[in-house]
Length: 148
Image 1 (cartoon, rainbow, N blue to C red):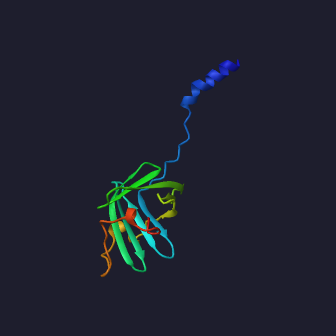
Image 2 (cartoon, rainbow, N blue to C red):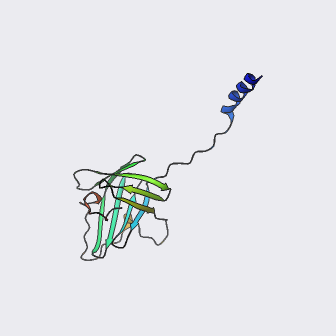
Image 3 (spheres, helix red, strand yellow):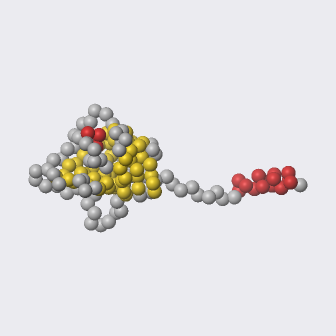
């Protein structure tokens, strides 16, 4: 009798709806890191492109290039850089990434919510006079603290 009940459960189990699994968080979107020295906004597009804007007391710098994401490692290749930088990423929640750089430094990125008046890096306004647009450099060449 037990065997028959077990077989019946196995027979009908595939017909039961399975609980939906949460989708894995996506790196696509705008992310911010901010401390007392720098504000960094990085935007990752679904097409594999990134753009990063760094704002410091010394001015504003913009970087852009390509990226690849495998769910755990973010590989960014700024325009003109000789090789990509590998950043290990772990989602603390869908809107928070703990990004660990090759140096061992870990930064907390926060997803930026879309608002009508928010300036996104991909749609950045013209740079003020005297600031650099460094499309040939990027996060791989930045000193500590100037990362997305």
